[in-house]
Image (tube, rainbow, N blue to C red; front, side):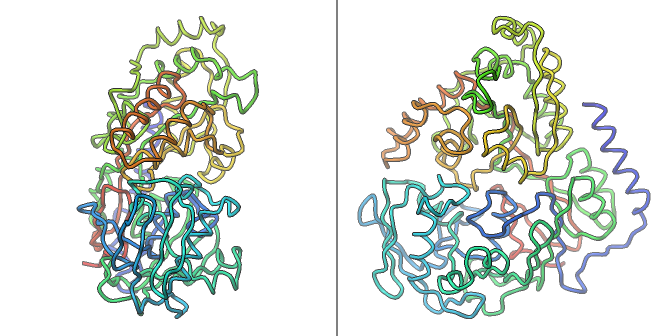
Length: 509
């Protein structure tokens, strides 16, 4: 762990030595915000990627029916001016007249019905089915009115509509098809996308016909250029060398050094994202998998000093979640969770009882910061689990995880910023591509919790699921994320706890 920290500091020092005299080179004069990210986006279509990068991009280029205020978390009108729930499984929306898509076409009920029915259809194979599988269908009730029928009540429905249901232009997407749309997408958001190179870059320009009065406002900055780089070190190099105006998820060790730069600023904010360790309890990678044994999984939980990782590596007030969800989410019952203390001795004893007194070899795939992965690797090595760390790009790891190829991997989940456990637990425990537990009881409880608006029934079902998940040590929540941002001092940028950078609200000083 100390070696990784020294390496990070050495990289920063090397770059600083060549960049210390740089002037403030933000692209204020060109009115272009240069953004650099390392989670390359292979497909910008909002429904066909589940990367946080993709969520960030779609909130700039697309609008949804409703908007969640980042300060109050209250739902406000966006493409819909009003809505009502005549019964627990129906939502009726009245659409805003005069809204234009980036191709000049006007928003109608046809666009909304097309979008909702497409993503709710299992045949569409969207990236995160649990975000939409509670929707039955949408029906047009007028040129600017839509009725959405739900398969079951969903108390968090409007949050989903706000955060993960941007609206397609029906005629354009049908004309160009899914592949054509990913290459040249059209939305109705404050920025229009002018160029896409998948996995390389995305260019945005302010949409001058964006509708007046939007809570998103009209962007103050004319253009945005988003480039993808392979790793955190390259991100930092670009920022320090004056070739980027904004980066995030930088190594927390570098915060103070960046703040010493005269033209840069680093800030941090806890987000709704949690880091986790997924374990193949279901044996998707083979019946001879040691992780199918309960005592092995429990040993792994005891082997890792999660508090030390949160305090010393993540820093900034990072917490260790007791349950496999973000603490503020509805249904995230910490008291129902089985606790595992840090105890290498217990871990070794459990491994011996499981038939592995000398430990075993295993791949540990990861897309989190390398020093965080190395820390987990070192803790496992200390009890005899010889984990070989395989650092992958996010998209590559997700592809392997969904294919059932990873016995153990480190990842993170931000719940699409939805403050309800229905945005995290079903994704990893509903029997889908990301489920490495495949527990019918857990699936049953999650369905119960997601099928009623009765808060007590929901709590009871989710608590039962959390107890079983932690009792069986299926999936280890490691720490909350404290997102660290680095940007030009010429940029007026506000971070929010929902981990959604709102570039349309940013401006030059």
